[in-house]
Amino acid sequence: MAGGTFVARNKVRAGAYINFVSAFSPLGNVSDRGIVLLPMAVPFGPVGEAVTVDGKTDVREVFGLSSLSPELLLLREAAKRAREVLVWRLSGGETATKTDGSLTVTAKYPGSVGNKLAVKILEPEEAEGPYTVQTYLDGKLMEEQQALTIDALADNQWVLFSGTGDLQPHAGIILEGGTDTEPEDTDWEDFFTAAKRLTYQTMAVPTEDPSIKQMAVEFVKEMREEEGVKIQAVVADLEADYEGIISVKGGVRLSDGTEVSEAEATAYVAGMTAGAAVNKSNTYDSYDGAVAVLNPLLSSEIIKGLNAGQFIFIERGNKVVVEQDINTFVSFTTDKGEAFRKNRTLRVMDAIAGDIRETFENYYLGKCANDEDGRELFREELFAYLTQLYELRAVEKPELTDIVVSRGDTADTVVVDMAVQPVDAMEKLYMTVTVS
Image 1 (cartoon, rainbow, N blue to C red):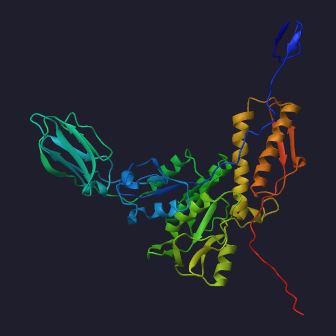
Image 2 (image 1 turned 45 degrees about the vertical axis):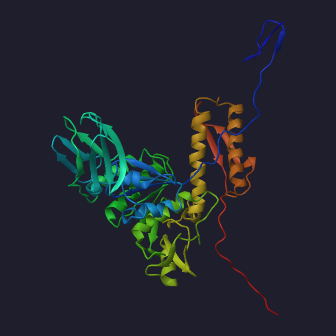
Image 3 (image 1 turned 30 degrees about the vertical axis):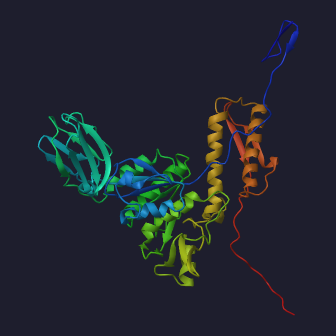
């Protein structure tokens, strides 16, 4: 008796041919959020590359600075709400170095923090034994190794060694000459070029420079409309009239007295936006750690700002909250209505675009036949995905009839028409009370 599995029902021998298949199970899921891209000028660390910072990162090990240092204000603000911050160091400077005899010690990265580095060489504990070489940052021991000669020294995350010959004891080779440079237009251009290949939801653009802010607008439009990558950027005080741009109007004062300008506040808003789930609005959400608004606006000024698409902070009691979670889009049309200015709604739409694209490319493109059964399978996939969003209270309850999947003009084309209604948060209450 023959047996086995089958593809076509064309077996010659008698027998039982049995296939096992899985019941339908959706392959796509609602993607995670929470990643911010933050360009900033810092006095140490890699230049021209993204460094991932999360809750487990010791920033001193990366940037040579205390987590409370003024130079890391932007990072602290972004990290209050973001799951991960991709820090991009915009510019470098001169690299600190020092030569003593045959040994040259050079900071691993350019910047003024290199001037806080020093290397001590301790006498061997035993005759003809190795020297102990210690690397210090701002008086704190960071690295230690043992070697007999300069050639045997291993570079570490702080300094590079060069030269030849035997080591000699030294009480402290202190590096000098490290400097910082201000970011130039070319540094920003390099950043935007590299940002095309990074993965994040929101980018902060913490600058007052109008030309850099316009670069950000053009970059986001290119990514959203040509590359299909649904990111947003947060800038300071710009009427961009585009859903991919959030414009922060006004700064805040933190509980420790630190004043955060509207340009610096872009880091916090970027973290808040990236960290917000598809079923969450940031309207009336608090600015963590803020106790006052710098130069608070009058009600008439707030209304004017909202109509211009500004992201505004207001004071409520002893807290600072977001007036409305909106972007800069204001030119509403019949095809693109007011819903596009709400960031919660846009997060749902962006999630749908990104998640369905990923599911199609990973599991259907080139793998699923474009026949009636294949299209029905994809239709069920889309319905299952919308059901996930519904269970998250991100969209209204979907119906299978809301989704039509059909063959396109060519044999390899699939056309989808899908109706979806994102859920917004309650923001306005109109109540009539009749008193008798």
